[in-house]
Image 1 (cartoon, rainbow, N blue to C red):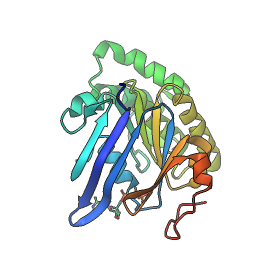
Image 2 (image 1 turned 90 degrees about the vertical axis):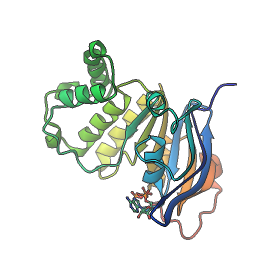
Image 3 (image 1 turned 135 degrees about the vertical axis):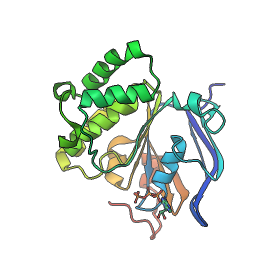
Image 4 (image 1 turned 60 degrees about the horizontal axis):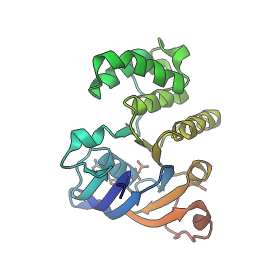
Amino acid sequence: MKEPIIKVTNLSHRYNAQWAIKDINFEFQEKGIYGLLGANGAGKSTLMNIICGVLNQSEGDVFINGINLREQPVVAKKHIGFLPQQPPLQLELTIKEYLQYCAGLRLMPENTIKAAVEEVMEKCQISHFAGRIIKNLSGGYQQRVGIAQSIIHKPDFIVLDEPTNGLDPNQILEVRSLIKDIATERTVLLSTHILQEVQALCDDIWMINEGQIIFSGSLDEFDNYIMPSTFTATL
Ligand code: ATP
């Protein structure tokens, strides 16, 4: 049987004595755009950071295409792309230089980097800005650059942590359109606190509240779900 693209088992994490996520279990078998919806502080970034191997969980396991991320991080990470939640990038590098640097960090063979950078710039519609300094770009273009670095090594699974946070309405539409486009070739897990975002983009939804998954299902099923009064996602 085919391994799930991602499988998370009994995943928990605490910062000091405080549990940020507790006993999370899910898996994706099919390609698609999956949404993790949760209010500020619900545990989204903690979960995303663990799934992408930038934070070590306190308990539980993450499997990417059947590979245990804790046991084989280098191999597992080849299958994952990650756009972390981040403030505007204050980088003095041009888009092209930054993407070349990211490709190097991903240990891509030297002779493949030039073509890969051109390809992702084309895909993310930033080729015309290749020589622009990143810190001078608008938020929308910075997110396109962020998405470009997340797919440069051609992962089959990417994680986008609040990808439209802080963008204006036009930029939000543009970034969502890009996400839909890149999701035709890979599976996407995105987090957001905006209900409209999952409605616009996602096939299935996981809802996280106080570190626990309280709903999982399709958008149709979600329409009939009665949210707990403590849940404060933007409607
Ligand atoms: P936001 O949308 O505001 O980023 P989130 O859903 O991504 O929220 P997390 O950032 O994962 O939530 O935070 C979950 C809980 O863990 C919160 O209570 C937060 O205060 C706490 N937390 C997160 N990072 C740390 C840290 N480095 N040290 C201590 N506590 C943390």
